[in-house]
Image 1 (cartoon, one colour):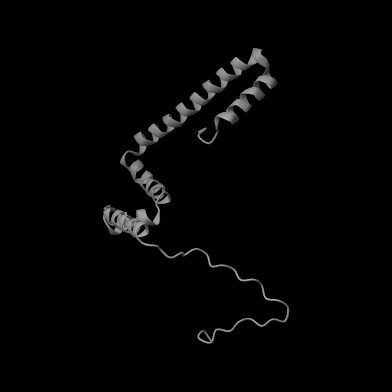
Image 2 (cartoon, helix red, strand yellow; image 1 turned 120 degrees about the vertical axis):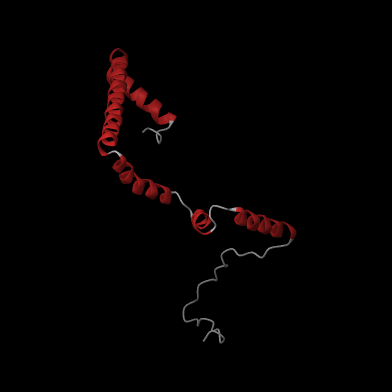
Length: 134
């Protein structure tokens, strides 16, 4: 629930709460907050268990598409190819990565970085013509 809040944000919240509530009321506010969060979590887990009891095996049928979507959300193109085309065997990619790494180490690989930009044309300057391309 609070996975995206770091320690620095927690310290800022604690200092702000201390300034706003004061040292007398802060422990009571923390107790109330933790009790409320625990109660909300208990209600949510109770609702989930009640749905499981009432729907029975149909509950798993409802959850399966959501689980499939969550699985697809985390997939990279490499993982999709590995799972669906190679049956989960990613040794092909490891062999290719190893071969490419060996090639880079043993020979001078060409630089495939972005081409160097030419200077812009001056006013009334004609662009170069590539006779092979026209």
